[in-house]
Amino acid sequence: MSAVEDVRQVPQDFLALELREIRGHLDSIDKRLDSLDKRIDTVESGNDVRCQALVQRIDVVESANGVRYQAIIQRLKQFQQSFSFDRRISDLEADKKRLASWRLLSATSGLIHNPLKYLPD
Image 1: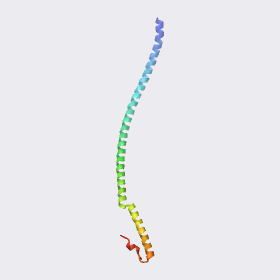
Image 2: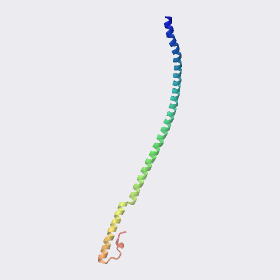
Image 3: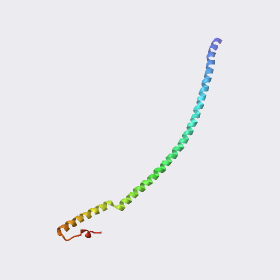
């Protein structure tokens, strides 16, 4: 039986050396992966901080723009109310119609020479 044991022992001795070498390579790969994981975690945490800072800056800019937008809308409403374009245009059209009617009256009667002095101020 010693021959059988010797036959078994030869592959085991050969494989044991190869297995130790493979195990050493795998351990070095594990160490590299662990160091890469640590570096990735460090980079991710830095990116998280930067991302949070950017989100906060974006929120500040959005709120400032919202305030500016509301101020512009309010200012436009004030301009619209102060000028009242619709009312002024309708007043001008009414004055134009009155002037035309005065001209027609003046042309037909010959009595009124200056129709503008009869228009209200």
